[in-house]
Length: 464
Ligand code: ARG
Image 1 (cartoon, rainbow, N blue to C red):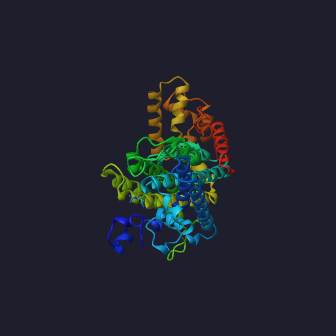
Image 2 (tube, protein in one colour):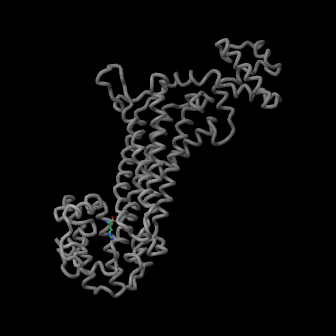
């Protein structure tokens, strides 16, 4: 079979080595983007007077036929012809339909810039779907926050009880990190908003292509700065993999929280039966396998980022075939992230909060900071208040008691500043209600944050 570059060679490539180097198996995903780029390139060649109007029209018709055939029959994009990559596939199909005019399409163009274009077009069309999947997880968190209502729970630092918070506040903490994931994808979209065409293989093209018009036609606002850079640049793949890795880190932390909080030890939430699995041996088990898989798959996506950075780091300027490795990493990261986002949304959707359990855990010695704040309100310097309350906590621990059980006399043994009103001041509800900043767990602040999150989600055409 003739390849895109056969002319220079006296014989055929070794079949196994050819198969080793082919990318069609995975870059067929870029089919629609490749055709779109070629349609624009043909129009650009015609505008520059390089292609006759008749040839340009034939190419246009041929490429559209190929697109139609692929949408009518997805099996059409098959490797039955042993194509090296998606670019070879499209060109062969085009020539089969329109003959010689098809052989003029590649004038002034290289696969190096073509693949750089295709990947950008691919990400431009796929990232909005990922962002929507992230927003769907946010919608599920908001739904869970609604079911939790005004339930309280402990917050933790060092995985030790810290201060009471609303359950909704805890859930909104994960909303905040997920919203950053969407923003980070927007910066990837900005990075890839640059037309690579006109770069040729590495030195630019010898035809007077109006790259500005081409950029507009393909939806780019900027033109690449340097043709040599285009040839070897896959920074944007690393940026995407970084966005995916952090996105997976966030999902993994959500998974970890709910693996813990649905365990017998915590019992704060109940997993839906449909989101758990049993044990083949131990009849009592209700295992959080789907959450564990979300946590586990984060390693794989981070691995793609690390692997890709290593692949890039030693490359000399310009295109090198190593760069073909970008696609499997990118596609698998995308698929894994999408799968985990959907799984997480579905698991969260079925979670039931146990308000009585979380409320019980939100009471007790984790009100110590509120006791200190009480003393501060009565005029004691905070550092002194901290010491007074520290001694009080030590005593309560010794006596296995808590603040609620103290009589006023006992309070006053520790400081004469304590008065009858200490009882109302030192409750979980008073603790959250006393918070004053917009990012705090104060009920009004949480209600406003939930409204804001709901508005954000509705921007994706989703309801929460
Ligand atoms: N399949 C190749 C890739 O993904 C396309 C570019 C090929 N360019 C070349 N000079 N061999 O990188």
